[in-house]
Amino acid sequence: MYIEQLEKSMYDLICETSTNLPKDVRRAVKAAREQEDAGTRAAMSLDTIAKNINMADDKLSPICQDTGLPTFKIKTPIGVNQLEIKTAIKKALVQATKDGKLRPNAVDSLTGENSGDNLGEGLPVIKFEQWEKDHIEVKLILKGGGCENKNIQYSLPTELEGLGRAGRDLDGIRKCILHSVYQAQGQGCSAGFIGVGIGGDRTSGYELAKDQLFRAVDDVNPNAQLAELEAYILDSANKLGIGTMGFGGEATLLGCKIGVMHRIPASFYVSVAYNCWAYRRMAVDLDPATGNVTNWHYNEGEKLSFEQEDGQAETKQTSRVVELTAPISEEQIRDLQVGDVVKISGPMYTGRDAIHKHLSENDAPVDLNGHIIYHCGPVVLKNEDGGYEIVAAGPTTSIREEPYQGDIMKKFGIRAVIGKGGMGPKTLAALQEHGGVYLNAIGGAAQYYADCIKAVEGVDLLQFGIPEAMWHLRVEDFTAVVTMDSHGNSLHADVDQSSLEKLSQFKEKVFN
Image (cartoon, rainbow, N blue to C red):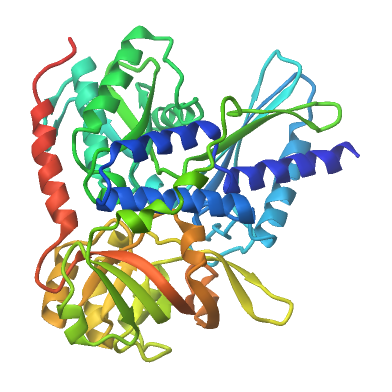
């Protein structure tokens, strides 16, 4: 009976973490919305994020389709069987994946094969610690790949773009943390949260940084120096103008938590763990005798639903709105400008890393001329009739496809790509030459976009795994922003340059 209840408790923890944003994070998102001017792209993005949070609540479905690498931190009293807890977690993960609460994310690094159940060598990450309290504490964080890829580690002293030399002192640490926010831009689904680890070695520094992400958003660091630094970083980062999704705006960082440990004389690391706005971490206390949940963490204060503001996004919208139905002509694409909002209907095809590599070497399984590739790895359930249902379908970070994207668009006649975070100069040049656009969808808004998908009309290359397959979708009023157009303009390059200029204003020494 204990084992069954323990497994249920772990299943409940996984589902709650994936589908229900914690109260402290909701308050931070609400504060960010209140900072933005009505009618801006950042305000529109935050409205979409708020809608997505509500939809995930209502449907009990993943907030973001990238449910990340499940990482458990567990503290147990003396005498508790940790092997039983590990077994219960693995069984709960398999069931949660089957039920569409998690996307299958465990990929063999050598073969590329997806296990399909989130289990594999080293997965999930489960770390135990013994303590003197009489209950079990289980913490879980689901940190997606888009924000995980923007983690960064600095070895001091170092030279930083825009900030100059960062030395082995508090001011050098300050510069590294500010630079970590700048380098993330919109690729980590800003506005985000950061955990910082000062000291240790390369491994323990990152471990300490990720541990900070389990702190409450509104707590105060007991170390006075670090409390001052946290407040300074939060204020300064929001003056960089990167904004939500990297569209520009007032809210770039929603939380900064810093920890410190000793180091050896030869090494001085500053490690930063970047987390997206979809800050999915939860924790429970368990009765070690029964396996029952006795307490949920991050449960203080009011749970904001954003319901009253749901209708505001459309009335605030001041950008030009263009309705498109695929297939799309070059003439329609050439008419679009950076800043336009598009609403797409018709067929759309997903394609991530495996698809782009495949298309670079092979023919396409379908005619892509005039069509749209969506950088998305959805959460998918198979129906009893053999069809498929898209449970969650937000965009993935596009920059990974930079080596392939322009060539593939020209090879197959693709007119638009949808993703998040923007792409680089090679893709921008191809858009101008070929007549294409890059459309930035709102990262993490997996329920909002799943609602735009009216049918799954087929799938190709399923051997790559559910996230990497090419899904044939039929969409209606799928909304995104033109951030790279066919005239050589890139909002991402503009925001990067302007935020670098603002970053340089923080070059002078602040802390001794």
